[in-house]
Length: 360
Image (cartoon, rainbow, N blue to C red; front, side):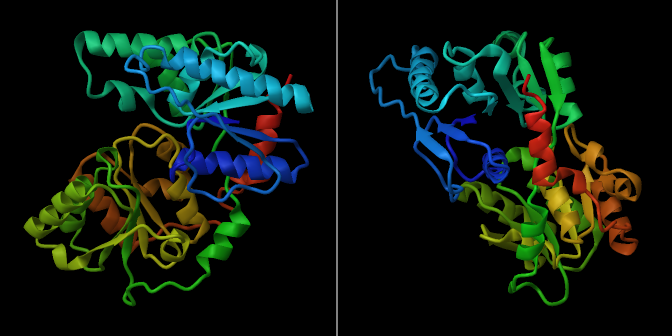
């Protein structure tokens, strides 16, 4: 596995879950991190290596990709010399992919690029004209003719349609979940509002659209408090607090911040809401259902429409506050049926087997 650092984030958590699962099945796993940052505990037995770029010259940005690729090659060659050739290499996150693409030590046929997000929304949405064209060309050059995994069909289809990429091999493999552990953590105690509450889990980032969430919450007239589990810049938080005040809901919106165990909150919530403009997969939707909590999500590009099928599809809303509010009211009044075996196909062991099937 190769990734550009391990700060607290969804893709990073996915990588460590995969590593843990592969190790549990008896495989040797190397994890190359391209930055010296790790906010998660590392699984025992992993060959964890930090490949840090210490170049501080004024022109370092110009040569960054080729320079860091050479550093990666040295680490790969040493690892393979010590323990044998890798059977499978998976690169995660776009910046990592740009470096891995330039590698001369990694076998092209064994190397896969795992896409965690909808690239057209993340990289092109705010661009126009020449800037948009150039960015699209750069992305195309990274993935053209290579092996690509999308965490949802929408992610893979977006790469092919928006960037005219034709992968050599392609696969859709969802994110892994340690279902037993999630349910164990969900049962742990937590000091939550006693009367019930709605919850949103996610960092304060513009793609998460907390502004849409607050408007929808105000329109829904649901009187239960809304708990925001997440954090972001002081400026962003202040803007959301001001918006809540203007909407007359400030006394019912709880900025809980980051919590080590969000599952204890999710499992006790009356409803979990996703209000994003795009979600490559939508981890928190699966986590909520595994905790027995109904979900509402915008019908945004990415995973939600793929994940929420059957009665769960009633929780999908259009990308505006009015539709989101109406859907919230419907799910609040008429919760969907949550099957006991929902999303069992995303258990870590099953997802690891899908990755191992990529080996030729």
